[in-house]
Length: 390
Image 1 (cartoon, rainbow, N blue to C red):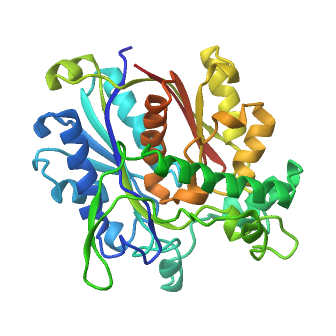
Image 2: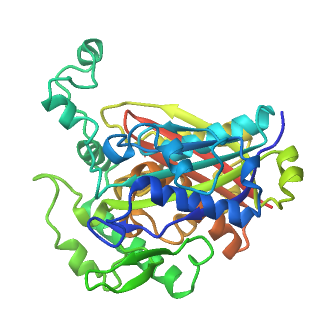
């Protein structure tokens, strides 16, 4: 089996709901990051064998194979194919796994894994609610309903279940939310995001044209007092909007090649994909699968949690990474060192390759070798990726 190397990675800065990226069509924005990874790798666009793009709400502007439409909005030639993937929040992390598997097998030499989600323009539920209201039903079959009777599958309920199952109190979750902002602020102030972010031109409400290059969700005035005062999501719950990921617009991309691809592109590898795992778990609690997924990945590689230098665990809700820390015994100082989705935003289908872009950048910034990325996903799923910086 061959190796899979990352030769370029790029992301947009996150845009808040109705924020700076609100006027960008998903295909146009995704086309920009495709062009950027081509430019970063100094690659001939015609050498790209495929584009695999994650997207969760594949409706409206994000429907009809967003990957292909993004290609046609980019400088890539028409000869480059594309396909779209939905593994819920892990969609573009799964796109990365598919890309790596393709080049490792030798079936392809150069694949771009990417993701996009414009949550302002195509909100969560856009692929479900309008269809249901039009009489086209719900995605849960009768056999599934019989298997899980009287269950309303909800990530919000799952996040609270995780908090209660692992004994996580509101104060600890609030403190974690503040830490996400503090780390993101430090990363901005030190210029640690500059190498990973593609500046995007936007027009402000007053007509001023600027480049969007700082994640819009970061609260530079964040305080524990303010975070602690936010209303609970559930009456008897422990989570609030301040300890949940932010609705976000954004796109990201990672170029993956094998040895033949390295030679054809004349590229220098930034990292090697060491291991890939995906697991399924309880779809009701839904969000705890990164815990067994991480344990499985470490067992299969013969590594220990202390062998990993940096972790990216998606902050869908604060209870997810806090429970993950508690159960894995990982060093909190190595987790989401530049902040996470609570501060930076969670553009659903774009988050997988977004986190990988940030992980790779953080490994370079702090001169570290091993990185592990994981995220919870709808349906009780989790992807885990371990990379080695070269």
